[in-house]
Amino acid sequence: MTILDRWGEGVTATIYDVARHAGVSVATVSRVLNGLKVREDLVERVRETVLRLNYTPSRTAQRMRKSTSHLWALIVPDFENAFFTRVARGVEEICQPRDTCVFIGSSDDDPEKERRYLEVALAERVGGVVITPSSDTTDLTRIVSAGIPVVVVDRAVPNGAYDTILTDNMAGGRLGAEHLLGQNLRTVACVVGPENPTSQARLEGFLSAAKASPAIDIVRIERGNNRLDGGYRAMQRIIQSEARFDAVFVTNNLMAVGIIKALGDMLPERRNDIPVVGFDLDEIPLLSGACIASINQDPHEIGRIAGERILLQQAGTPPVCSIALRPTLVATAGLGYP
Image 1 (cartoon, rainbow, N blue to C red):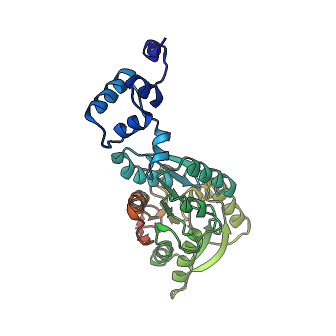
Image 2 (cartoon, one colour; image 1 turned 60 degrees about the horizontal axis):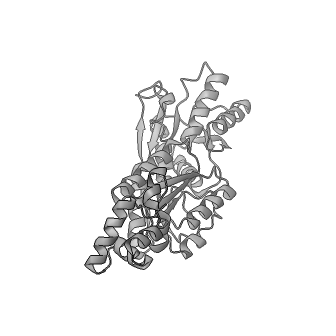
Image 3 (cartoon, one colour; image 1 turned 90 degrees about the vertical axis):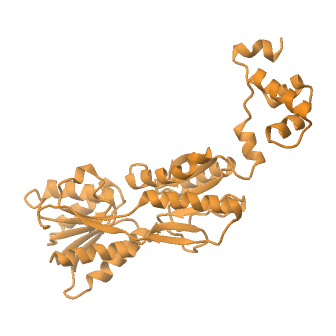
């Protein structure tokens, strides 16, 4: 029984089957499939056999033969954060017209989990890696040594050795402080994410602008984990300290949700009197109607530019670039704002 007899039983043809039934070598089949020069009669025989056997070339084998894979990796800290969903959309905008797919891994800011995703990317010889590093010690050298393009997004790495696309986070922090000063809000509690470059730049930008005259009084700074529960616990600690504040500055959108919930649970009578200023807050439905000011980034554009940089690296490794997009601030019409 031949493969032609068994095709209806779900047998998958291989390149060796095509070569055997066409009466040519495997190398000839490969040359035909890759559009290389082959005698016309052999081309016809191979093409007829491919159709008869319904042969589909192995994508894995293609990746091994080509320097540009049709699979990219996007590694981010948190699937739950809409910011990274929009980054993924931006990357996909570049990939899809080019018959390229993106696999997404969530590192949860865990260096070991991130390392495993990078190993998968290396083993699959992906066409590019777009990554938000979990820490300053994220090691991308093996990926680069393998000739795989890398673009860092949202968080810069210390040595600046990679294409980096992010928001001007210091400018975002300054926007937050200037807004509060413009609203005559002078006593502020801060909830800041882990000690990574993004959180630190946002805090530094806020503190630098808060020194304007008359200055903002920073009554307390608490750290959180960039998730809802971290914002809730940080706000709990601030309230339990009995610090007096009339506004909150927060460096992460999910923590803002936790902060507002904690205010509602612990200070229900003031919940609508305490403005919250933070990043990307106007895209969270739970915050609609709340007294917030949102420092908005453009994650879709960050992802789109990252995808373009992958393509440019594939075409010849241009000089390393660093792009910082300017954020904008939008205040909701709520209690305490005009």
